[in-house]
Image 1 (tube, rainbow, N blue to C red):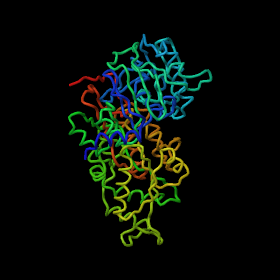
Image 2: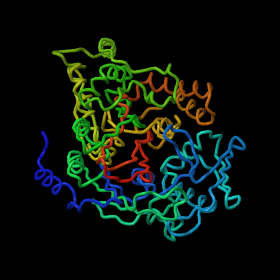
Image 3: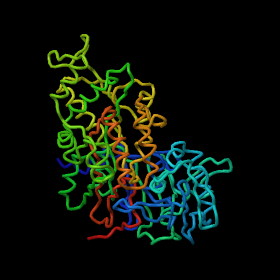
Image 4: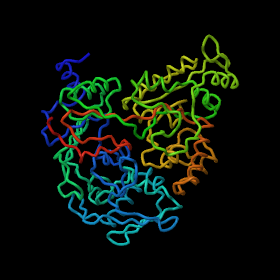
Length: 508
């Protein structure tokens, strides 16, 4: 049912800030589900700075996920542990200072010091500014994945003025086509065109990122013309927006996996690998996509999406097989009584945690637990903020945490296998450790593309699969919707790059 304009205004007034007048033709208003938090360097691991193009990275990914020049025009590996980067000449930061090798060195060193995640991501031992246009990075071990990791938003290049005299982050000052100009907490962030940008000048003068966390309100704001571009509309709204002559829907496979992460601690029911394998076999991923997401997603039977070609086709998969699942639970000592799996008189009940701030997350979590209930496995579901959920996870008070990560984001298998599941990784909260997996991942990041790297990552993925550490559920299809006058927008497969410098507003 189409809501009235009066109801739309009422909802928006309740959930978001007072509505501005319709934006001028040189201003794009983007409705986002996340607050951009431009004064917090670690927020969403700096991804807003990359999405908005306030910052540039040394290397970028094109729309085919190929490495292309950013602030570095060329790079080569001169020894197993040494990389030499030729930097772009004539580039200026938003504060008027020049970009050069010394500035890149300072920025990367600050990032590593302030963001612990970056140290493991980059494996950097030393950085040397050999001359103004040459940066040399020595890694702590042979590290073929470095160019891909340097496309990650966390490695955006900051001007020295982004930090105070004590090295504390103050605000993002970069070299990108848009510069940060304004932030109103819980309302909006504003960027404006940087006229001395080294590339082609954007058509837009200003971009306003309006924080509209309510997914229905974000779509209504688009339909009423209060915003020009809505990021991540609800799957249920996509068909209605597609049928509207005033809006255009963009939907493409992108980096991103919704999955359940098991707690494999021995004192949890999911500490038994047979229980984890059985749960994987109980879930019809196609039904999750069709029923919960209106078809906006891809069923996930592997950790990596087939859209990206990161691993061999022979990688093992998690297939729907309820009979095999029942046999595994019986082997683990469970019996089905009145349609519910029990052990020692107690029903098999899993503590499932998730967070609602991602559009699809509650829908996927509800679908997963409903399908498990049909098979006789009960769930105690808790929805929290992401930070609140992680408090329970780190305390070990969970069986499954339904999360979203972006395994394909840098175009290399290393990023999330290493950071999420390696026994030494700071983000590994599963209590899982596998010497076979660790050795394969440690080796894989040293190898250039080819059969040996494929075989090594196949070994890692097989270990992850056989121990059933995760429940792959849905590979993300990234959706956005825009007013018809918005031209030039494209979904980038990384999921974290808007390329608004290529966007304009033109009346049909």
